[in-house]
Image (tube, rainbow, N blue to C red; front, top):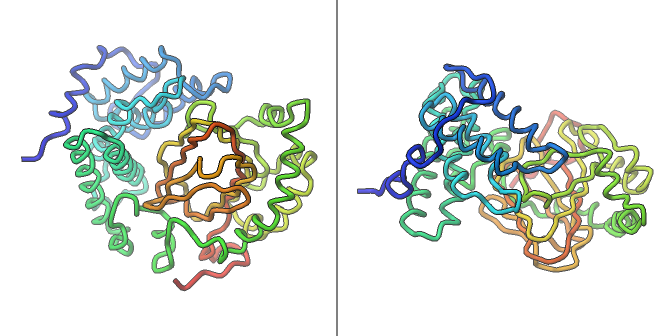
Amino acid sequence: GAVSLLVLLGSPAATAPQPLSLPFQYSTDFDLYNQGEAVTYFEEKFYHENRKSLTEDELREVDSLKDRAFKEPVLALAAAQVLYMFAWFRPSGQIIRENVVAAAQLFESSISASRCSAQSPEWNEWACDIRWMHSALLYNWLAETERDAPLSQVFMSKAYELLAGLRSVPRYAGVSDRWVTPLHVNFNSVKFPGRPTRPIWDTNKVAIGRFLEENHHIFKAELESILNDHRGLFQELQRHDPSREHLATPGGWETVRVVRYHHWYDLFCEMAPQTCALVRSRPEINNCKYMNVNYVKLNPGTHLKPHFGNGPRLSAHLSIIAPEPLRAGMSVGSEQVMWMEGKAIIFDDTYPHCVSHWGEQPRYVMLVWFCHPCDETNDHGQTCPEV
């Protein structure tokens, strides 16, 4: 018969520390409340002094929550989210693989601890998509990165078992035939049924992609002016407008906002007026509710864990400064693409995606969220493609 996950890994509860009292209030019957309390508690520690990691002592607190969650399913969702968001990496950047395994298991066990069966009439109210999709996503990632073949197969079997459950959910009936692997799951296909859906879009067929590439030289000149300023302007811009980001290797993904949800960073626009003027000129950005433009500095050795974005939108990455060709790239769904200086990547970030930088020098990317071309609720000036 099939080898069970617990046989291969051992029981988490058997080897974890003895349970301690939890440092936050929790409910004995409502796991969404527990998720909120746990995330709030560890989030404050994670972002303390903008370090974006937990200390070894704080990671031991997570171990205690993890142990309790395997014994008390009402804590499973809380522990899964904390493990995924805040305990994927050590402060050194090392991946804590056993925490990823536990997060996958606990997202899965939270399904039965809630009203999240595949036929549940309360799918949204209980955040069922988070439980099912994150569990499938993490098991798939574990399978792809596992060197032990039997264990890899167990992880992949779990991912496909969860995918089969997702495909039977009534609200996904219109797209289930296109969700062939866990990497095909995406939110935009649900939002725009019957319309084209793909991980990577043809840059030349998307107006914002052509626009970004045509103006790369302007973006680069203004960014280099900021980076070369002896006062350390890029770091000052970060310090005055810190971001909260938990996806990357600690210290690996440094962000400077241009505009987010229509809130412009005026100090940045004083330093880069042409950049802001160009961004303001685009209706597919400015007439979009879920709009965002950032500069991101990706440091060497950085990895972004697999994650989903929120629809309805598409994303663009324009590599502004990329001194080492073919040394940083991104997986989106089942496709891979490399960041090349001056080239824009248009992608659907509601597919699972992750990023890695294998080079030795930092690179700078403009990240843009813009209206999905098939979104008819915003006057974005784009045309929804037929195929």
